[in-house]
Length: 88
Image 1 (cartoon, rainbow, N blue to C red):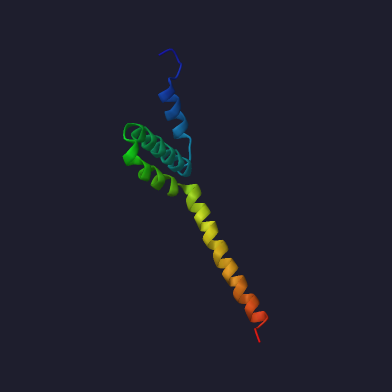
Image 2 (image 1 turned 90 degrees about the vertical axis):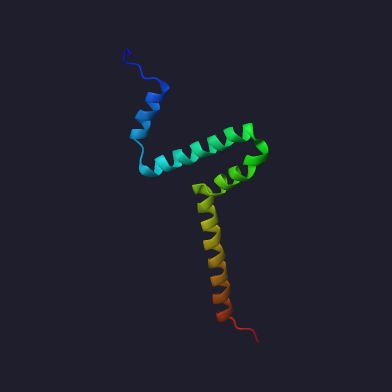
């Protein structure tokens, strides 16, 4: 083989050096790529599946969690301020 790595071998080498977290992210990306490939073949069926994949992606989960935490914080702040300054 002459010492040169082909693209698949390079990818395998790089995968061996990723953390478990990074592997999970790569697998998420591959799932999205596969969904897009299927969508090109059957665009009417895959749109919902792609949206499901994207909505379950790690970044979107984090964003939803931050939004939920912020909502709880705002409600808590509102309750705290209503206890400090009771209505008459």
